[in-house]
Image 1 (tube, rainbow, N blue to C red):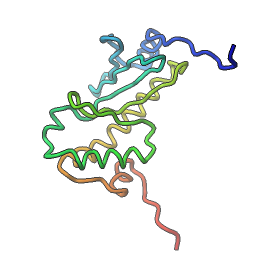
Image 2 (image 1 turned 135 degrees about the vertical axis):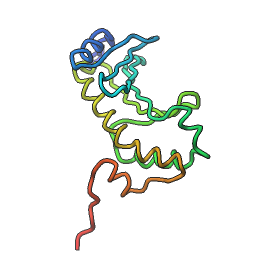
Image 3 (image 1 turned 90 degrees about the vertical axis):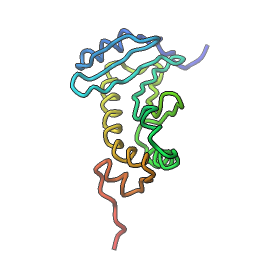
Image 4 (image 1 turned 60 degrees about the vertical axis):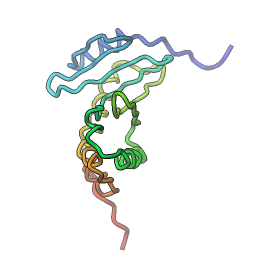
Length: 158
């Protein structure tokens, strides 16, 4: 016997219901869910992974990546953004592109998922201009990342 509480199995029906109650459109796909907002056309993909729920949204597809001469600036910008503790991580797949990913622990409360989707949408929309510029070879610096998130740079004290 262990003292660790056991997480309840992931119930995608509860997850889908929480998303619908928050105004999202939900469709079943393969082994998960596609969740989209009615007005923006963006989609999130939710997949169970060993008791966890992985939430993904595509930031750049393979066609976007094909427009770049090389991906060095993109990967450098992604690394710099990741170090900003943005609350999620990036995933890269050669066939499908660049993704924002959030891994939700076993036993998370489904009614909190809409807040996660809002956070991913905020990060996605904030980083879109910087990632688009990275495809042209421009690496985002700290000031550019601050501006993307509408933060003011902290100046050293006098």
